[in-house]
Length: 262
Image 1 (tube, rainbow, N blue to C red):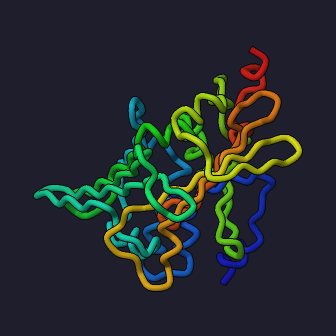
Image 2: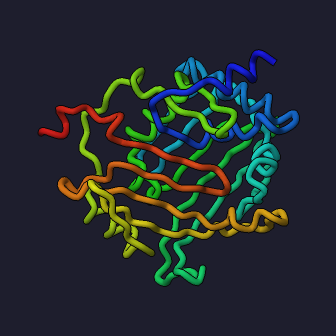
């Protein structure tokens, strides 16, 4: 089909892969939920019409015309949430991620973060929330910009990726988190690697889930890679997998160059 041929040829120089984009791409191989995911992806091109954001101690993405159903996420991730709280007019899911050691044992005192999904009375996702610890590695302004960039991105079906169009997003005049502040919150990493310009701190978090589909047990373990520039100590990139969904954000592509010099 011409549509899928176009998707296979869609490549850009940008490297962003964000949660909702991966949901849309992964769903290309699925059933009815692929269409709902793709509709959500299409809405991103008119972001302010279909979405709003709120940030404080948490970051929330609000869906003005929701499409995705709760079971779509289980079908995609093959994992159920930690907590499921049904109410008469809505349903609330929470995914808890807890820092673990090399033996997958929860580290004490506990360091954790959560991701919340809220569904309306039609069982459609109307709010997606990330807790404060997650914002230490994905600052709200940069997280919002990366989500907005999905609307101008392109899908690569062969690699199951969506790459955001960072050139179309207004640059952010803000400082990035520094390594000492991030490490103070997350504690020592599981492993440290180095490349020419960066130190890469690797953290492991385990999803506390009620059930995992057979063959997908590895999805419960989230390996988060934080790249800190050796010279500036800034957090320049975050990459990880959360409940089977991949995120990779290059913060430098969103940062106003003037903010680096201030």
